[in-house]
Image 1 (spheres, rainbow, N blue to C red):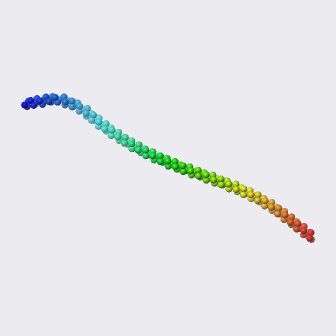
Image 2: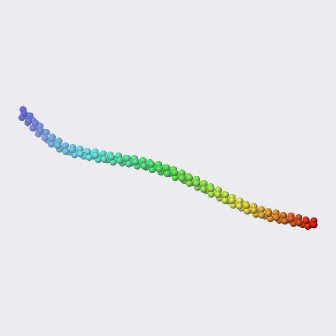
Length: 147
């Protein structure tokens, strides 16, 4: 019986040998595929890290862009205020210049009126002196007649 069992074991081993050989043949590609899969997973992890950093940089760039846009809007508003102030100052300067020109013209007119008035007064003074001389001459003539 032992011999029979040993013979059966040998027969089973002979039948198993091609399967073992096939198993060894299949194990090698499985090991290679497992290594390739591990490498792919590693590369994928690296790619995910790169992608995550790129997303962070993109988010940072978007934030910087939004801040730059806000700064540009603030600058535009300040520029508009400066333009308005400049227009207001220019209007004030023009108004002051016009007022100054009016005052200069008024002063010239007053000076002209003063000159004319002085000339009239001089004329009146001469006329008064002439009349006073006439009166004095008339009085003197009357005194001579009385004497």
